Length: 467
Ligand SMILES: Cc1cc2nc3c(=O)[nH]c(=O)nc-3n(C[C@H](O)[C@H](O)[C@H](O)COP(=O)(O)OP(=O)(O)OC[C@H]3O[C@@H](n4cnc5c(N)ncnc54)[C@H](O)[C@@H]3O)c2cc1C
Image 1 (cartoon, rainbow, N blue to C red):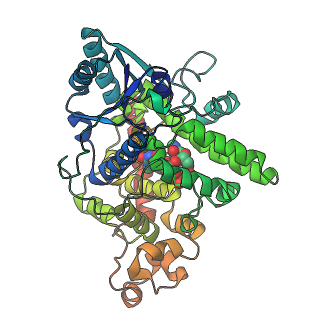
Image 2 (cartoon, helix red, strand yellow):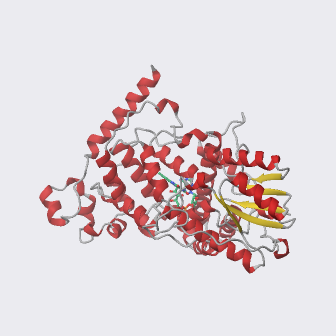
């Protein structure tokens, strides 16, 4: 009999390590690990508990159950294995530095207890080290990575374990948020679980996927898959998602629709690209990927940081995004790029401040993707936005939310303001702003001035690094 240790793979279907374990009898286990929970936050833990309740329900309906432990997984897994007479443990790899150190300690403990262990790359199509330059180095440029990723053959989804493979066992109750020391989330957390994930996938592949390339940048339209929290927590497997996109591809009406499906597949590849970057460079969680950007003198400004977090900067598209993040634990990709650029290039604040806030608020916080996104926006990462290409928050708002529909959805103070005035907010006179929307703030900085200051800040840093 084997244990399957669930971590960020809270599903039974399309789970490589679980499927392999289920060749034998299998007891699934989840461990509430203090070291991991120390980095967690209420929205994410709420989603995780909902996903675990769904997963446990799946096992129970089939005569099995999820064993639940608390503490250091190195101790808990050895104890659970001893209690149930298991021969070994299986799991899917997790790629952050913290996860790798934890897994090394678990391996040592299992070997000490004479237990077999094996890990699988079940949450990626192509594991780190499998897509490299001709010299065998990991890619730092996405386009080359994507071409190889796209052309590689992909496995199909794995079956869930057969009912007979599940060990009959009555697991302990799952803890509540309060038991784990968290407050209730102060935002709406979307439903977790495999059924919710499959519904999202089916709805997306039924139509929006064919317009994805054209519409994905418009936050008011909700034309993206909204699968990020499910992919992050593994409530759906990557092979199952990819198979659905291949089916959509075969049903595409024309070249445009086909290209749109491929555009979506290329986003799935970004997730793997950033996971590879993280695996080979675990230090990026706290350090710039580009060392020569290490001399950037970010500003300290608590008031500006507070205004950004509260959605009170006086730049409507930025504020709408930051309020969506607060209310929903989610943020549209285009707007993530805009708010991250604003923090680093207009407020001149360190991307790590933004990353910390995203980590606290996002249900889909994924170390590789979040870090990759922030270092892209800050021009410090792999294949990042060049430091001299600075988003203009007004024109971004005008281009991607022309009717100010998204902006006014999240900023009620602007609900009666004409879109033209919303997009020209920074240019209006003080008395005009006070007449139109007295409760909405004036811009906290002048974009033109800050753009120049950002360019100077980067050029100074690069000059100093050359010395
Ligand atoms: C500053 C910043 C921070 C980000 N933080 C995260 C994060 O913590 N977690 C996260 O999953 N994504 C993050 N992203 C990437 C992207 O914004 C989200 O994946 C996307 O908005 C999620 O919505 P969706 O599922 O509807 O995306 P879709 O457009 O439907 O994309 C499908 C899936 O592809 C992956 N994906 C899409 N875009 C990217 C990307 N640029 N990089 C990596 N993977 C991508 C995600 O898994 C996503 O669910 C971040 C981007 C930026 C600029």
